[in-house]
Length: 204
Image (cartoon, rainbow, N blue to C red; front, side, top):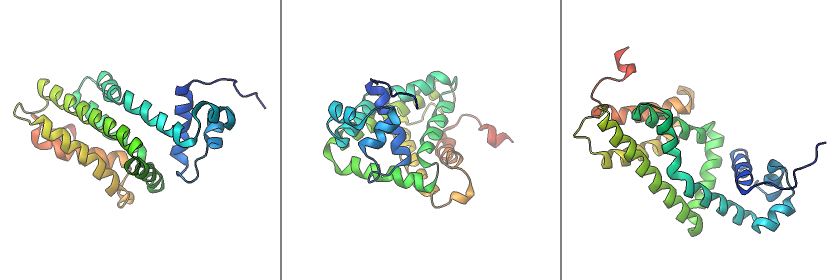
């Protein structure tokens, strides 16, 4: 058995905690599980963060602090703003790799909504995400992908709501296809009236 590393960075711990939350419900998640994922001892995490709640709150704060960069990275990876928007929709489908996985993520969302400290970070993330979506849509107008009379403020809010709603409804219609395709189709339907030209799917 290889020895565990003596130290890991906070970012490595957060990545490990995120991986653990993707396979364990809140009631199953322990410092020991996160420590095993990170390759350290539970005592080391307790000494650094104090408790599981404190570690998860630190993770939430880190996610909130970096949330404005997530969509920016997608934008940098795609020449088309609308392709970046669709990539965002597909990334969100990662929360619904199965109905059971979605249920686990909704259990963590319950904590985010019920606990004021977590809710504060959730609000920061949500506002940063909507701002990122608004920037993508504004870029799409400038690039000639969307009509010049597009209300990007209203449409960014609609896209945000659509992605969340599509995540929920996909679990009810799982047999109709994977979550990424389901969510992307929902986003495409929302932006279709604003397109300056047909989507590739519409041309086939």
